[in-house]
Image 1 (cartoon, one colour):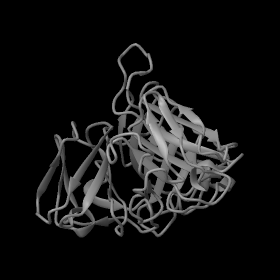
Image 2: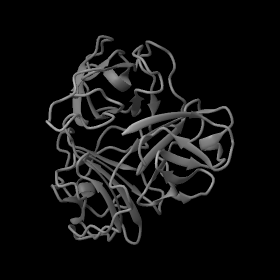
Image 3: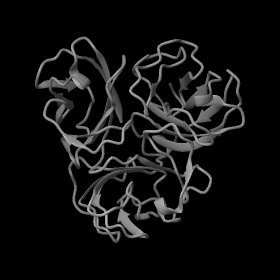
Amino acid sequence: MNNNLYTGNATDNRAITGVGFKPDLTWIKERQSGPSHLLQDVVRGATYQVYPNATDAQINTTNQVKSFDSDGYTIGTGTWINNNSDTYVGWNWLAGGSQGSSNTDGSINTTYTSVNTTSGISISTYAGNTTSGATIGHGLGAVPNFIMIKNLNSTENWVVYHSAIADPQTKFLQLNLSSAAQTQTGIWNDTLPTSSVISLGNYGSVNESPDNYVCYAFTEKRGYSHFNYYTGNGNADGTFCYTGFRPSWILVKITEAQDQWNMYDDRRLGYNDYNNYLAANTTNGESTGNGDANAIDILSNGFKIRGNGNAMNQANYQYVFAAFGQTLVGSNDIPNNAR
């Protein structure tokens, strides 16, 4: 996983480099204001976009991301991705290195699945069948901790699974909304994911014929990714969240109340003076005020809450988070404790 920054110049066929690998999943946001987040992957194709902050169906465009390249990606002149003088951040993950092939472990065969079992990421597309109890294979070989699904053909909300929510088989979050965790047995069919499949109900957001879907699934890998929760204390001297590595990217959501999804990374500010954040469910620009009520410090082995804002630290409320490091730490299963 790696983050990159660039400034728009309105030049067509522009190569954005410095990622360090050919990305299979890229999430891009203009940092000042306005445009939606853009999410594209190798399974659907680089030119196909969905918007994490919106219900829109995917679109195919040739003036935003054009291709995934050996050290990054090529972009066009679209104002959401390359407006002159605007600044952008890209968050990039390596999956299987290609579009992959159909996974046949579930009752629904995926169209394609690109999977990296070492880093614990799977990207799949599948066609819904409107059948409760249908399953799709993810290929991770381990139980997913974090899942995001989007209907590609209809204006449906995103659906998010997080293993740290109480009774996760009956609850879900919505990436494009600020709402608290919802209870509905018809999303995951009241069934936890297994090391081979994800169970689905028959709702339009996850499984309706003839619509197509994209599924991003992640399983925890020691020294690289961590999916957990913490309880807010309402104090600027907030909770320390241990990950076992220095996080490069963090996503946090309160589960018991309405508030935004906060996103942090180690690149935009570049040092610990209460790191800036973006909200995954809005088009807002980043917070740039040090000491903000939703600020955190990114540390060598986790992150510490440094504000008392409700989106990050309301007293006695539960928050779930997803955190990724830049790379797996060694081969001896020893967490990274150095900055």
